[in-house]
Amino acid sequence: MTHDATSQTTGRPVPTDEAARAAQLVTEVATAARRAQRQLAPLTRQDKDAALHALADALVEATDRVLAANAEDLARARERGMSEGLIDRLALDAGRVAAVAGAVRDVAALPDPVGEIVDGQRLPNGLRVRRRRVPIGVVGMIYEARPNVTVDVAALALKSGNAVVLRGGSAAEATNAVIVEILRAALAGCGLSPDLVATVDPAGRPGATALMRARGLVDVLVPRGGAGLIKAVVESSQVPVIETGSGNCHVYVDASADLDDAVRIIINAKTQRVGVCNAAETLLVHEDVAEAFLPRAARALWERGVTLHADDAVRALLAAPGTEGALVAATEEDWATEYGSLDLAVRVVTDVHEATEHVRRYSTGHTEAVLAQDLRVVNAFTAGVDCAVVMVNASTRFTDGGQLGLGAELGISTQKLHARGPMGLAALTTTQWVVEGDGHVRP
Image 1 (cartoon, rainbow, N blue to C red):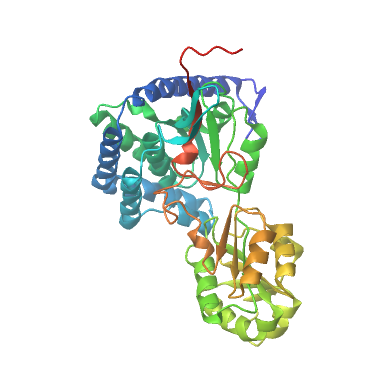
Image 2 (cartoon, one colour; image 1 turned 180 degrees about the vertical axis):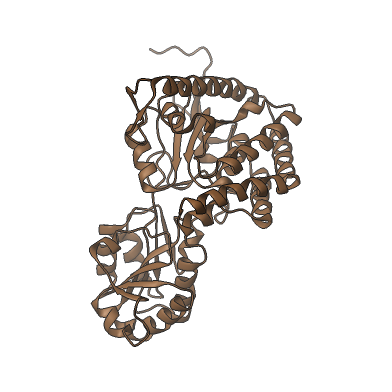
């Protein structure tokens, strides 16, 4: 067997026949998805919402099947030594399945973006011009260890008139297979093509490579996962990509902050769910409140098992018998790390300007938070950081499509074109110019 094809996601050789089989599968799946997507054009909002409710009901009814498949994935993940942060993303229980189904119903409750008039005018020559929202077409997703994404993307795509082709990764292979089967059966039960939601997981990693090369069949590709996955897709894809970035998120506690609120917020931002991209990874504290705030915050964080990677000033305030192992010296690497674990980098800064300078140097452009009562500080921070979302006196954990009223999210974009921040229904549309005349010809 020859090995002259190379995987763009791993850089390792792939058997030529395996790569060819993957390419053929992706072509067949994407072609069927494109054909199915056209079926959505005449549907009313009521039609699409009824289908979404059917999908949600089917998921709830099949909870036991989903959890059995998820147990297989979790057992395999633990055998392979997967990090606890990724395992948390992978894990489902009855409550999480119900929440995922609830998100589908939330999407159904949102206005239909298709056909929405973005803007319009009558030109001096009498032409009537308007821009309206239309579906993108076929959306590809490459993601890992996130079975909820399978449902979220399917719901958003259906409501916005798109079809989806999914590559969910080996970690959630069993769970995703069952979920896709449930969704496809529910679509068929509504008289819609099951090809509106399809997976190329059977093609493995070569399937991801083939999906990245499916220009003309797939209209846009969205990677969602770790920094390595995102980088590989952005650098290798021949299909246009919406980049979702990693989250090295900062919380700055100013001298004017309400310290009681600040303790609650940093605990929530760091520990409410550690393996997600909107969890806080660095805490910056104004030197004037460091002595009053840091011991309180450290105690609360240590009670929850957090290890503090601290600068000299922080360690001078917190070092005491019994803190060994829970308080370690920060390195340059710590400031740039998205931990995805119970670890937090901590630094004392002189003012908001030093805080924003630190953020600009190490931020991944995801979410940054300022805790302050002084409006001048708030304005300086929001103007000084370049990121998709700025939180003011609130936890970074609110950077989430569901929390911000989008029902669910495709991902959180850290790029600046087309979409930025949590991507909901509008991000799955593009615009079409409609120009109406009365026999107009150009002079």
